[in-house]
Length: 130
Image: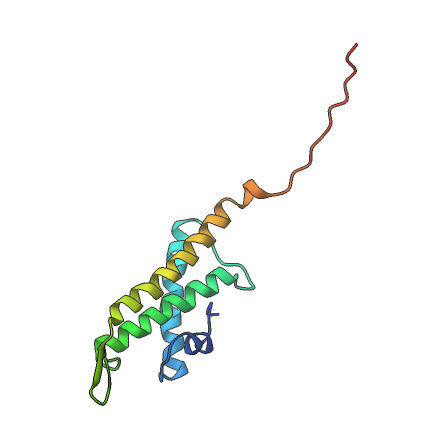
């Protein structure tokens, strides 16, 4: 089971990659997530929490953009006629990865501190004071 889907990735970034390849990249992103959760003594429950799904799709999207950028499939400039603009694709990769890591960190924080926020009951002590 992957934490996000090929459709999640296609909605987030424009990619012509086949779903099979996207799912392989998602598996790599999910493996990184699992490694971090294991280091923290945590795991993912079912259904997949929204923060984990978000982490998976952002990290996988960053990996896909990085793959395309390194292979030359994603150019680092944009041209229409005489107009040209330089695109800092590495900044986009970094932003996507950071969003994924922030979602993962938030999931870890919530899991680690969930015991502190559980409801409690106040018990009234009824002793006579004479």
